[in-house]
Length: 468
Image (cartoon, rainbow, N blue to C red; front, side, top):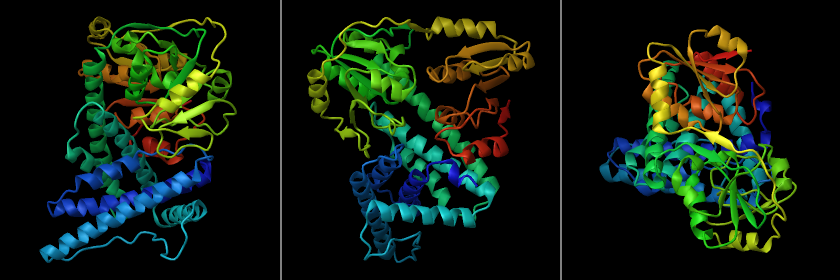
């Protein structure tokens, strides 16, 4: 059924959090039907939805505090809805979904047990097709919450966009919703996600400069250092601003690859380049400095045995120190106190092509041809099956933004997108293109940190082909 394919503790934690947020979403939708919007509640709910706990060593006190704030927000939303219905003299509907008894002392153990009850109810009540679609809806809503919060770094986001995320999540409250409607709404929300991604790309280009061809340094220099990881390059930008007059060298791992295609980041002399092999445990053990895990990073740190780790995640792991994005002084002081690297390590650079002329040349070469976009290294047998197609290679998962550019520039071509493996990053990209009517191929590989129901939904409900 998929319950045991993921860590049961993290699955229960996620279930108990989502249960509160989807109830808030229910009341937000009801309020919208009364032409009422509470922007403060919507923003707080979307912020909570963006939280990702990937480590079993998560800080239990931080989790309980987070849950209590969420529980109070739900009560505030419900009370606001009830009061407005009474004012208008209309009937109101309450959603009773797995309440915790008033006299029970709330701690992490109780919440995990509560999450297990919620999961058991879902699996005992819903049909298999509903289970996988509900899992996909929650995954997509969480991805959208991270995107909209990143977009807020660059411009004011309209309240209707916050509402759209909660309206979509509220589908997970309606067990009786028809299968066809769920599939249709998922496709519609895919277009919403795609538009959010385009907006983020546009705003990044405005602030950090237009995309460029770049040669990314991978050598490690002597001196004090900070390693940054996560998906929101705005946090990297803030760190570089605060350390530009110091002797601290700043590196990133591959999750921050997007920063390198913008010229603004290379204006900072202490921005040194890419570090690591992709093996987090190994990289952390070898890094001689301080590590900065940004708010929406989904990298697992359970097995990390070394490193001074600072994080802006709302719920930190026990082996990291919580800091605020507005106050990076503890991180910087710790980096200055470290010995740093005592010598230089020379590594081969990596090249990325993003200049407009490169894309325009690709468009010219594809005229009148079918296009196979290879996300990562795909097998020769797949290439053989698409003989005659023009093959465009993308260094997945490092420059996935390139896919968006290609899809926008090649609107008339018959396009196939092939992924070399299935992981969280793959799933995040696929949900962007579900409504693009593309032929999408996935090479089978071990799945990590992704619910098997999401893979099943891709294959059974959206006709994505898994191939050997």
